[in-house]
Image (cartoon, rainbow, N blue to C red; front, side, top):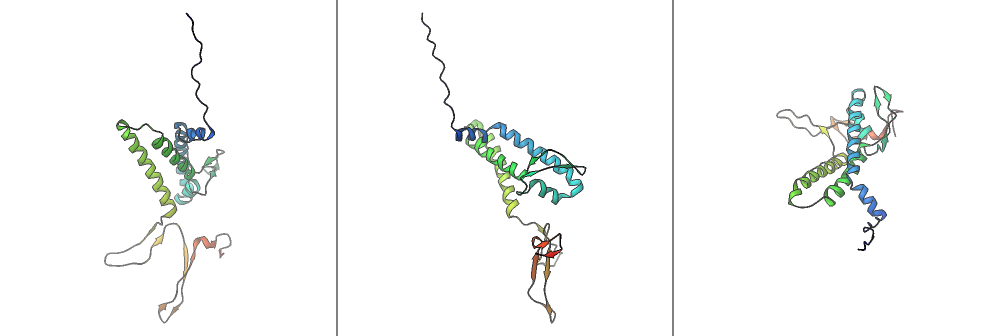
Length: 186
């Protein structure tokens, strides 16, 4: 009786794009991004006590914050973390590739697909709101009307000349055009 010693079929080596796809759609990347978001949220919550809500959100979750160093009790923590916006962007890509494209399909897995789609829509909606929303307050009493709203985050200087009791053209200087160090218009 002769036994043939043929090796089992060898898996073909993946190409570089295939390996990149495997990493971007993998469960490991999803786990890392979720842990990073948990750390960022925890540090931001603690830092918010000393610095306030808006500056802390800008530091941790603005698209310009690529890397940051958290602070605890006014002391820098030597743990460089990626910005929350970019961690969410990587998580969004991971959910699309791994949670929609790569996931098993079938009637038994619809709940899983719905959950992944829900998270994708929330992340995409957060990105759209981050870039395109304007938030403010318009105080209107009963029976009154208003045509002005106060922006929550941006301060402006409005100047107008009043002649004969009537306002002329209103000139607006936006907060981003005012240099905070010199307190002058750029």
